[in-house]
Length: 140
Image (cartoon, rainbow, N blue to C red; front, side, top):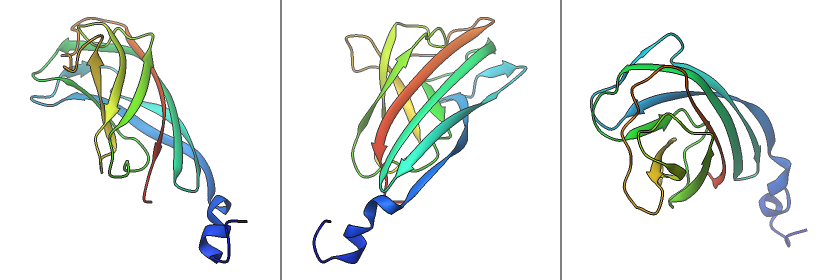
């Protein structure tokens, strides 16, 4: 028990699982993606803690657009702080990516170049992939 505050005592009673739709985009002009352009991810929410995971597969980018890669569609807005996302099996971006970050009060993240603070443009090719997972706080 967290004390006499009833809301705090029941804070972990808010349990939810579900799916969300992830999309690949950019910070500028949208890339051209033929075939599937959205993928199903999964989440578990306990109280204010959200865990997400998704496998974006077989992306066919015929025009990479402009700006940095942006993955949208997280199931809840991130609370008012930057939060890391782990990325693996990534060929969607033009540069080597190990992780990314969710901006405060948003439901998307940016992949970040390895050993850098810069983003990366999407690669232009067939059959591109990305797996990601992360845990973040939400006000929802």
